[in-house]
Image (tube, rainbow, N blue to C red; front, top):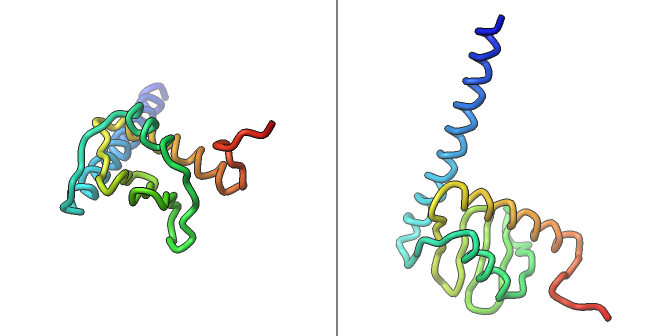
Length: 120
């Protein structure tokens, strides 16, 4: 019985790790496939760039996309474009943190809450 529990736990860890690393590989491949300028960055760089712009939801897209009309910026779930250049995360953990940040900001905008404006 103990062997079965250890086997199932090991299988779950393997599947989670495989899925996690495969998602990062897809992130890198997508950005490289655009054949345009890109650079590696960390989560802090992403948040700093993201906070420079005012974002709106792009209703013309079938997936969750935020866009800024200034400087040709678009942010998908795992594809980040600022000032016409793509941002590739330096490792899978940084990508996961960026995805969580994007999802939180997208939900805020979808609810109509704009945290960039101050109400006095």
